[in-house]
Image 1 (spheres, rainbow, N blue to C red):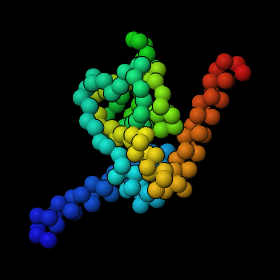
Image 2 (cartoon, rainbow, N blue to C red; image 1 turned 120 degrees about the vertical axis):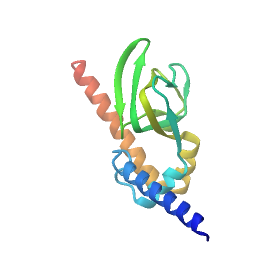
Image 3 (cartoon, one colour; image 1 turned 30 degrees about the horizontal axis):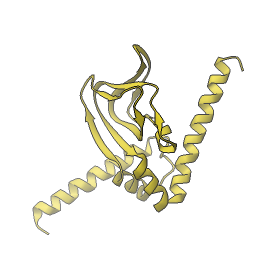
Image 4 (cartoon, one colour; image 1 turned 90 degrees about the horizontal axis):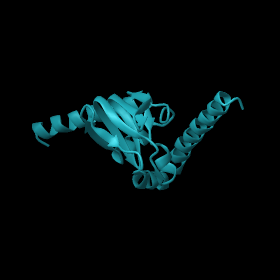
Length: 157
């Protein structure tokens, strides 16, 4: 291996370590091992969005979990903004469970970098590592339960 190849591998390893450390701060993945996180990164894509660029639009089929690596995105329906998401937050998780139609539009509020996990790649990950997949799916289920409970409280139920 030449010196150039050595430094290239060193950079890749350093970048991988940074990405693993980032994923450890994402609640959905915090309990997973470094090895599993590296495998998850291997099946994920990275996408850069310019300020005001649309991530996805309402009415489109959802097949991707999005994780905000840097920047800020906003979710809105028609013209009303509902929520802003920042580094370490994720959205589109329902797409990992079932093919669904987006009920909102999401756009980058400022320049942003997102990690994208496609359902088809996640399904392959589940087959390769069912134990890690179950841990992720449990976290998703708990998030849904908490959201439903919070909604019930707001409605007086």
